[in-house]
Length: 163
Image (cartoon, rainbow, N blue to C red; front, side):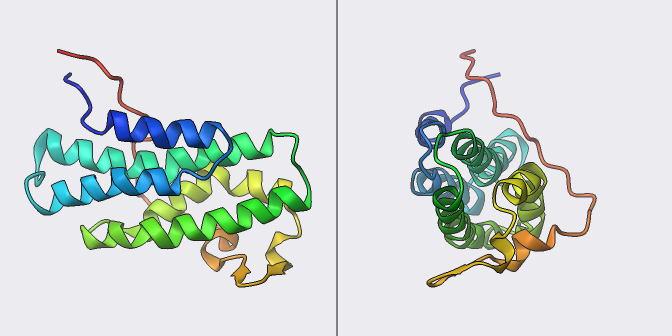
């Protein structure tokens, strides 16, 4: 396997998430590159698989790491819930539209994210469904929990092996 072409950009998102900072802004570069590739040259084979892996890695896995890091931090209660309630809708709105732009099912990615973090966020912020903080309301796609589908995503990050 060759070098995963999204490694350097993705590593920045992963690092931010591990530092308890939302990975959304760092993921914008990864998602932008993947979308650009999918719209031009990555129409099949390994390039397409790599681009789709990059989309999932940022949309699902980096946000999961951020949520896990924030939940395990010293900051709990209202501060934690406010941070999550701000970060999750921004992530959804900022990156989600790009998924549909290349023919991906945004709801399926949302379900993948919900499968990874839904119970954790509900446990950490049990009253979040009824809390409204300024312009940020707990968005329905997250709270609803989604019906199960057959959509399967690769929830692993490619190894960075040089061939």
